[in-house]
Length: 286
Ligand code: PMP
Image (cartoon, rainbow, N blue to C red; front, side, top):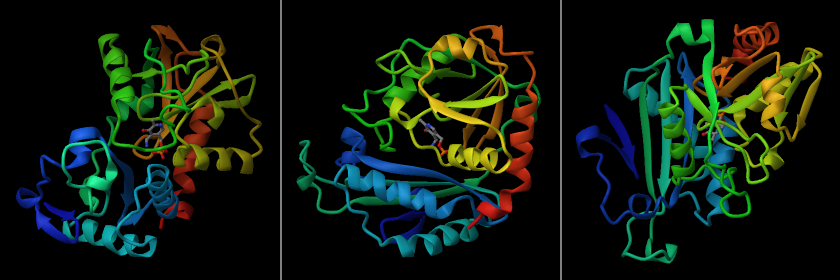
């Protein structure tokens, strides 16, 4: 496996980072997860734009201009002999003496990983997944904005652990005010009376790129959309529910806290949006 590290591709055995790297010491850095279909990357420009936005939000200038990334990512895919690939760009503050001050790190560390894409088991798409509402709250936007895709992922990890303890596929976090936000690695949608609902960005969520695509497809196909603030009760009364992210695309939800959502089967609008996502995919490949 070839890994891009800082300025060149190296074998994974040589792809090592210093114990003084502030990404390791403090979770100081940003990342993106991308997916390639047949060698073409889904929503490439949007992922790169979000990476730059995340970097800017923490005062981390990416060491390469935005225009250089597509060729690097293509090389990461082709060098590893891949077509359907999972890609992860990680940019940490870099190596520096102990201390929180980013000025201690003269140069960011850049890593690109490309692995074969490992699909979720088909049964999850056929039957839907189970969710639980977890106790841990989503980070307060004013403290650490969920829109920064940072290496500080502990908030989400705590949610995932809680969900695993409850034997659920994933956990939905509420925000400090008690409104629904998102799951540990995905955005959430639900359907109520034919209307597609999803927490608004103001609830304190990552501005998911798959979420944007699903909203666009819904709009183009005349599906009524509502972005707003919803409590857990709204979700309990939903007819359908699904999750979105780059690797899941559209994932149906069958159960919330051991109670069926709607019929307990993937609902018609969920299936329609999943189908629209798949049939329109080529429009979104870079
Ligand atoms: N929310 C969180 C917390 C995530 O980690 C992700 C995955 N990046 C998403 C939502 C979905 O984002 P995207 O559709 O851009 O993959």
